[in-house]
Image (cartoon, each protein chain N blue to C red):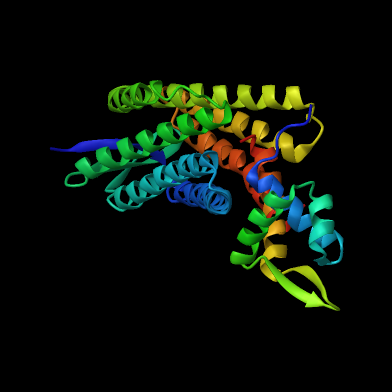
Length: 90
Length: 231
């Protein structure tokens, strides 16, 4: 049985999903890629937009989510944090 | 009142202070990094890990401060066989030296205990105040028998090494140097504390202990650099 994801894991999965799609993704695609329900997606998305890690944009009548520099920096920091956690066993 | 602080090989004066400065830098960098991750995630373990390393950094800071003030009060040298030692006689700095040394020892032991507590993922918070009191008593006692401090520090370091070893064994990561380096670092630091206990045999044990202790911080510095470089 897989371990339940923490809040941080979910945020990281969302940002990584956007990054993997070249920094731009449709909300529905993000929902599938990050394995989230519609309600959870909206809750976390609201937080990410508030924290300026993701911005919403409309292109050709489609809503897109775009990762910001702050979001990319956050991914880098999370990767470093995981290395730190693994190295120091905390 | 004329208080003899102790004997330090003449050529090693100030070099040991340089060693402590490196120790402060390494421990402070690790504490700052852990604190940054705490701000990022709000996870308590990062906060306490950072606090533990910060306490160790503070302890070395006290040692540096004590060294600088006390070394500058040197009044003369003493020759024992082939060796010439600097002997320090201190009047007004007597109390400062005592307080500085006790602060160094207390913060160091609390920091090491904190590290062990985080690494072994202890859940029992009730025992923490008792252990802090015991550390305080050990610190006071170490003013009479200096080795009480080094033995206690060696005990905590031994527990930390054991816990890291078990973590490594369970996760089967023994071949990766970065993951193995905390074991190497804390083992060398453990060895340095054991060497310090031999001070009653020869003052040169202080030089060897300080050098080994410095070497012990190098794998931690290596880890920090690797982390910053993102490797």
